[in-house]
Amino acid sequence: MKVPVGISNRHIHLTREHVDILFGKGYQLKKMKDLKQPGQYACEETVTIEGPKGKIHHVRILGPERKQSQLEISKTDSFVLGVKPPVRDSGDLKNTPGIIIEGTKGRVELEEGVILPVRHIHMDEEDAGRIGVKDKDIVSVKTRGERSVILENVLCRVSPNYSLEFHVDTDEGNAANLKNGDLVEIIELDAYREVRVMSPKTILLFNCGSSSIKYKLYEMPSKTILESGVIEKVTEDAYGHHIQAISEQMKPYQIDAIAHRVVHGGEDFDQSVLITEETKEIIRKLSPLAPLHNPVNLLGIEWAEKLFPGLPQVAVFDTAFHQTMPPSSYIYPIPYEYYLDHKIRKYGFHGSSHRYVMERAEEMMEIPKEKLRLISCHIGNGVSVTALRYGKSYDTSMGMTPLAGVSMGTRSGNIDPGIVPYLAEIEQTDVHGAIEVLNKRSGLLGISGVSNDIREVLKGAAEGNERCRLAIDIFSTKLHTYIGLYLARLNGVDGIIFTAGIGENSPEIREMVCTGLEHAGVYLDHEANFNKRGERFISTKFSPVKVLVIPTNEELIMARDAYQLII
Image (cartoon, rainbow, N blue to C red; front, top):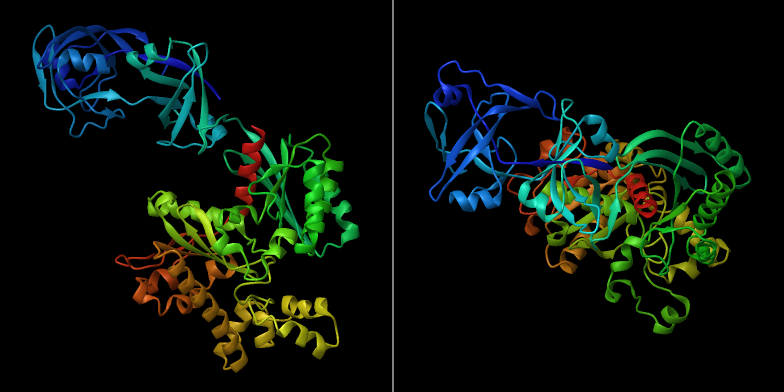
């Protein structure tokens, strides 16, 4: 977004009381000209300001009158006057230096009120919505021309009464070769200082599963959801028909890109990428590692290419976030040649979910993620636990496939590998048949004999069904065990996060998982855990380890990655 510049010269805002002292009782300031911001104007009158070292004459008064007098100057002015004002937002005057003001009839000794105005952008709510910011958010701007510079820490001031304008003082304006009416661009800086201009884009998301298609249409960076839906019981033959129906639904919109969830990216992808023919071939080659997911993910991509020709297509991989794990976390203790020749290793999944909740925890705890050790528990029908060390995945429970790790809805999680051939023998099947048992007939369903739905199993346990009780016991114990493992791997932890369907909605499971971790500094607040809803802390105020419930938003990560790749 391009924003016009308004250079802010030294000026002063006065109260009614101080106008009376400086110019005489009942004096009315005379308007010289209107300023760009509605209701604000420059007055004909000026004052002299005096500091410990010197004076500055002809300082313009701006109207209307304020509740508190305030002088805004530049750094150069502060040297002339001999004062040390802080960089502040207008009106934030606590612990600021004072100044002497001289008018035609008298003088005022301000005890506080001198500031260096923080660089800021005035904007209305519509402009703020277009770039996804709110009042008091911080952005950066890039100037144009031969002396192009980037100015960071620019404060957004949002109000229905504001007109779009970027304000800097004369010192910064001169240094950046700016003058009134010039244009600057609002930008964002990623971790590698790469600059991208912020502009609205519409992103369509596809999550093509083995039996369903989920879709959402986002406007970014405002994060506005324009359309969404889920199509259940989808057969492979009907994929094209359903995606065509979605494309018809999207006709009223100008779509800028399409993002696809892809479960397995192997070692080839450590971040989201624009899809090429080479990308599709790699996804196809990785299909044996995720046979239920990668083929249909690829099918969704190919149909989207046919039905939305010419649009950028983006692949967002479940495994990419975990590519930061050290070899001690991802190498299996089998002959090393199997890793070298066949890439048999731990990959991990639910990466977008773990990444999202880590970033929300950073904001909720008000500590940079680079200083946090977190354990993220994504507990749904699929379950994974991830150790997050200083903003990166350090270890995770799922392995080369989503079957590994803790007990899940229908998956066994880790078991003695010697069971696999024995199961094949018992079931009179092959290894694939045995794996089918571990994938689809185990976990909560296999132990309880009732359901893979935690609500049904908890209900059965409450009614005295011993197998349901055992299923819940095993489920929570495996989670508890992995948290203990990652407490050791991380050498302590600052926070534990619960997310996904069960993690967000089952206080009973959260309590069972956390009970016994008091020795490690985990103390739950019973009221917050059981009787409150939504994103929150559920640990006590004095718990050394914070416990958080954070509803996941994998789709937002997908939309954000796609947006970053196309702007």
